Structures are given as structure tokens and as C-alpha cells.
Amino acid sequence: MSKQVIFNLPVKDLEKSKAFFASLGFGFNPQMSGEHAANVIIEEGRISAMLMTEDFFRSLIDKPVVQAKEANEVIVCLVLDNRDEVASLVEKAVAAGGRTPHPLEDHGFMVTQGFEDIDGHLWNLVWMNRSSELTQS
Image 1: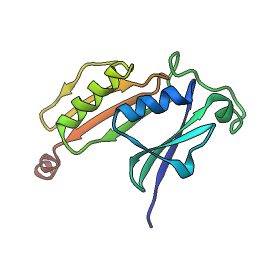
Image 2: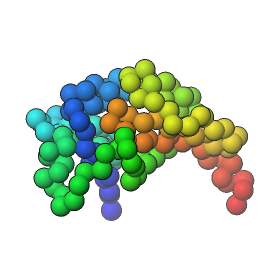
Image 3: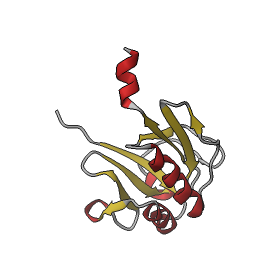
Image 4: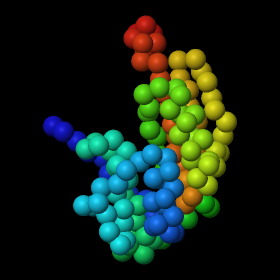
């Protein structure tokens, strides 16, 4: 069975959020985007994020929208192909107005660092040396 993950994030300003993610190198699916939402392609056909205006997001739920700059409910974690991608994506995020909530952690077999996007959503980026997983079993 093939699966796809689409997670929804409320954003203050859709155009600014689209510009932020475009500057990180992500593309958009125009068929799933419009005036109130934009679909960010993270991995074609597998993972995407739906950036939704707060009003549109609110129309889909029956409780308050969490203000991610004040409190967090989730950390989106992406496992990347190599350790350089972690540093590169964090650099791009910071240059585009994001921030890093913690320094890079290098555990030898794994590198991790995250960023907070312009709406306060937390993204954790991880690279793992898959060959070390095989030798530890």
C-alpha cells in the first residue's frame, strides 16, 4: 500500500510563508494551492505541507489555533540524505527569517539541528549514517 503524508500548518501571511519555503528550495503543487492554502512539496508524491491561512485552518477545527510562536504542539522531523543538507537547509531558513532553537548536535552516527519557520513551527533535520545502524544490530 502506498502512503502519502500531508500535514497542515496555520500561517499568518500565506505569501510570506510561501516565499520562506521557496527560499529553502521547496516547490509547490499548484493543483492543491489557492487563495487560502499552498501545498509545499517536500518529497514528490510522498510528503507535503499544506500552508493554510489561519482563518481557513480555523474553519476545519473546533478549538483555538495554537500560536506557534508562543507554544508548540508538534515538531516536524525530516530525515535528510546527507549531513551537509542539514547545515545547508538551516542556513537557508535563517537567511529567510527563521531561527535556530538549538545548536547543531553531531553524534558521529547522526547529525541533528532544527529551525523555527517564520510562523513559529519547529522543524528538526536529521541525517543518520545508515551503515552504523547495520553494525549495531
